Length: 336
Image (cartoon, rainbow, N blue to C red; front, side, top):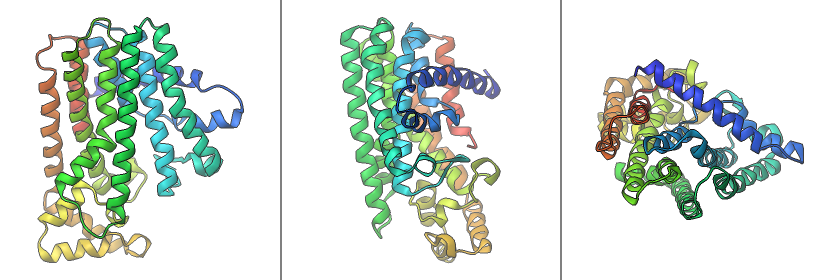
């Protein structure tokens, strides 16, 4: 399977998931449901639902059985995006106006709440319609609720890190993203396993480990894109996260690995926001590039990718397994 093939498969599944979600987010008041579906209508890779579907298929399940759980995790993901944008006061997300900018903060908060509650509605009602047992559904609800708690804990830790003058250690940062980002990847794969007709506790454990490792790899690369990403693809200036003062893994690594002279230059730009000059910002990106941060971060992400692949190594060859393997490679190698 080539990179173009996995992208094509991601797009195909994203279209299926989008149609399903938009059918679920149709109600009154109309503006509330338009707000709740705003980011979904803007598109996206739908990587987490893809993990649900392929985890289910690898264990003998079907797209039909996996779709309610796939929709549930995507609704939770969008719920976090809506509320994150409000907390960060962001106006754009991937070239699309944020929900609170388009509909106002009060309705955006309610839109996020709708997404959250609808996710559990999909698990309880739609999973049963798909033929999933009540025992499996109960386990799904439990795992997704725990993941949501972890996500909130991770976000709270992130807020604390952002407001502190202290730079976190790399291990502290990995612990934070393990909650904030990886928890949803982990539960995606777990719900996929539970959607399959004859999954075991070992299957759920293995797929959960796959998802958590992929989630950490995903966030590391996402952090990298926020520093050295192509502005034409990201819609943000190169070095944006450095200028915004975000204490992400590549920035922490750059500050740790740079010479004293270069570290001072990076700190001059770090958190300077609108006061930083384009020349200084460009110079900071050059410093980060020259000291090999991109390769270092991708190597760290690759380590987690290999841990993920190891978690499903014992399963027999199948198209679904290869899809998971190539999606893992896609996560580490992506540019957006």
